[in-house]
Amino acid sequence: MKTKMRNIAMAVAITVGATAVTASEFKNTELVLNTAEKTMAMESWMLDADLFGADDSKSASSTVVEIAVSNPDFSILVEAVSKAGLVDALSAEGPFTVFAPTNDAFKSLFSQLGVSGVKDLTAEQLTPILTYHVVSGKVMSTDLSNTSVATLNGQKIKIDLSSGVKINESKVVAADIEGKNGVIHVIDKVLIP
Image (cartoon, rainbow, N blue to C red; front, top):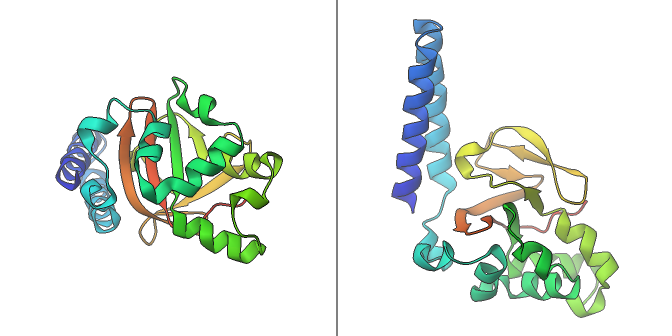
């Protein structure tokens, strides 16, 4: 997975560099250097998908929900999505980009809220939080830039590439787990709108 990402990132760097040649030699050199630095930065935070339980052969034919269901590190996320009634919506054609918090991220949030788990929250409380983790379209790690992006709940999340990859205050710990209706990026904190 990491090798595949490196090849994609380098292809982007070469394509971007080749396109910029018509502008000027200086801009071309600067653009290729910036792209190469971002490629190295992406590689430093991307984990091999095998370390996070993703299987490319299964993922490509599964929805983002099915991928989450098959990974025990997402059991709390799956429970929350089910309780909020979002399973069918996230199993639809999409494509979707899901910033998926791990079980540890949810446990930390529950501790901060003083609740014991999903059972202590209502669907009305969960829905705006969960839809804040989903962006319309398939946004791969190579598509990310320093920007703000609207989520399905209408509010924006901030993407920051200055030190690894952060979504608001959460770090991306695994990227580009592809499914047939989108992609999952694993994050270490629950995003709160």
